[in-house]
Length: 349
Image 1 (tube, one colour):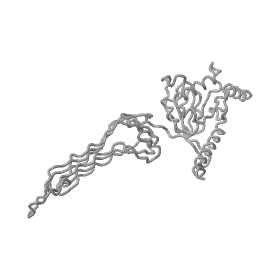
Image 2 (image 1 turned 135 degrees about the vertical axis):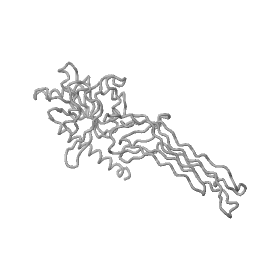
Image 3 (image 1 turned 180 degrees about the vertical axis):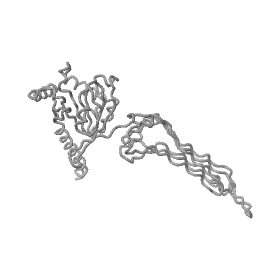
């Protein structure tokens, strides 16, 4: 299935049924009075996050959704049937926005999350409702309220603990293959990854995390160069970024430091919050150098970048250093989870 992470849809809830104008007609009851029932409520529309749904591809085929209207009331004070609610399943991590107002309606981040996006109209009142002491035989009723209509923007933000960031051909997909069971495409040309990939990394019994690999960024991505920055939103839910850099890029005439700063600049152009996310430096492709030169290369790049955070020299292709990286990431995430759990109790002490 093609990966689709954005879609626009129209939703229209059902209208309420018309109220009934009716009078009792029974033998030996000359003045039976009004007995018109109310109309049924129209069906509402809900979005529900489901575990098995992975993209928004279905919404490229069907863009309009309409719930059924309520039935009209009838005599003998019978209320019309309510229109059934319409349930639309979406992928976990879908953010819903009203396109007319720009308001964010909800974030369906967990399996089973439910969001009302269009409320059904209330059924109209039958003439029984209008009976008063001075109006014993009312001949009026309500038509029923119309259902809500909305234009919705759906945007999928993948749920991952760790995000891989870097230029094209930095080796992000190879790293994903080395530490997880995911098998993203790997080739010796730029933009091999055309859409985000998720992989589950297992580092021990009941110890695992999810990593997201997005297409590479180049200078000018914020202005639309390359694949642009549309996939950066998939890193917004991550708690840690791994900035993967080709440590041997200068062999082909490039400069790892220049490439790093270009990607970092595009990250800041997209979001200050994402630029401030905890980030580790991963210097890849060290297998292209003799073993005695690898530590020297890592130190030279770190010095040139004035890097202060954690740094890892690896070869994703040879799976050299990837196990230690995965274990350290897992330890960091566990520490973050423990700190988040302890924070409420510490605040109240």
